Amino acid sequence: MMAAFILAFSLLTLLMFFVSYCRSLTASSLHTSISEDVRDVTGIQVRAAGRDYARVIQILQLCPDRPEDRSGLQIVAAYYSFLNLLEQGFAKISPAVRTWAEEERAGCAHFAAVALGRRIALNREMLAQQVEL
Amino acid sequence: MSAGVCFVALSVLRAWFLKYFFLNLYVILSMSADLLRLYVLKYYGLESPQYEYAYYYTDCLLTVALFVAVISLASRVFGELNLTRYVRFVAVLLLLGTVGFSYAVVAQSTERLATRFALELSQNLYFVGLVLTYLLWGAVLKLKETRTRLVQMVLSLGLYFSAYAGCYALVNLAPKYEVVQYLAPILGCFLPISWSLTIMRHSEDSRLIPARLVAVPR
Picture (cartoon, each protein chain N blue to C red):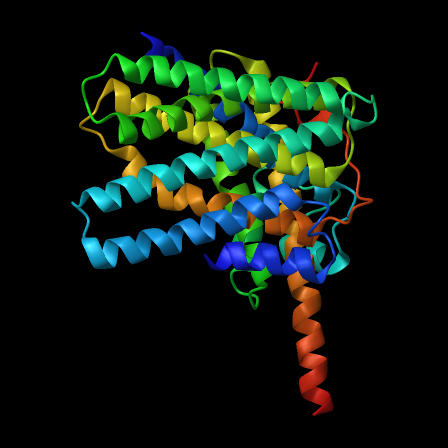
């Protein structure tokens, strides 16, 4: 009985801390706007939407890797998958969950787009260095 | 191991070692425990009582170190209210209470007292640590704590404690699923990696609005 209570409490807090931790990651990129280069290659107009995430990730994989971004992107990818599951599971029952999940997915897309902007800048820098040599 | 080295090296290089002393202490102890377990495993084998003692006692020591790390973060959060002394007092009481409770549970058992006590204390401390971190997160939201580093470190600890407490509870409910065995190495890397990322990405002056981070906006 006690173990079942601890398990239920742990799962609830795990979910709560996971969502808050992921939101703290995506929130850190919110004050950075999406660069012109990223807008050009992804077709994002004003704000990133949840559906842009997959496209941004595809383009990200084509750019040279930045190790400092890797783990943040992996955690946000896990969060995005969790949001997709949540949307598929609860969207019909509660429209509020759907709206919330869509906003969160847009946050994930923005986070990935900002990371893509950094990678494009790094790519340009590397290219400039090679031209100088 | 490399994540731990990275965190400690970053703390030393950027002169944060003393500022986050108890987090560094935990990471150093964790790396030392890994080395000790490896040594005992190599010389005595996986099934030996020596390895069992080494594993459970180092795990118990690490849990106490992590408990102290949570208290050090709580002291920072409550520091501005001059409540640090009370936080430490409550922490000591909680630790002694958990030790007493674990001993009382083990005293009724007929198994080997020493290893059973270390295991029981670890399990109970993980749960107490989880409750404390949950309360600390509540305090962060209530006191509108905005320091990004502090907030992310508390959240990482919350994730770690929840996952471990859940694993131990699952093992007690269904002993045939040895989830801790598989999850422990992954979870072990999580704290140093997330702490390293936090101190690499965010400066001491970096701020965020914690109310935006709650799962269900109020």
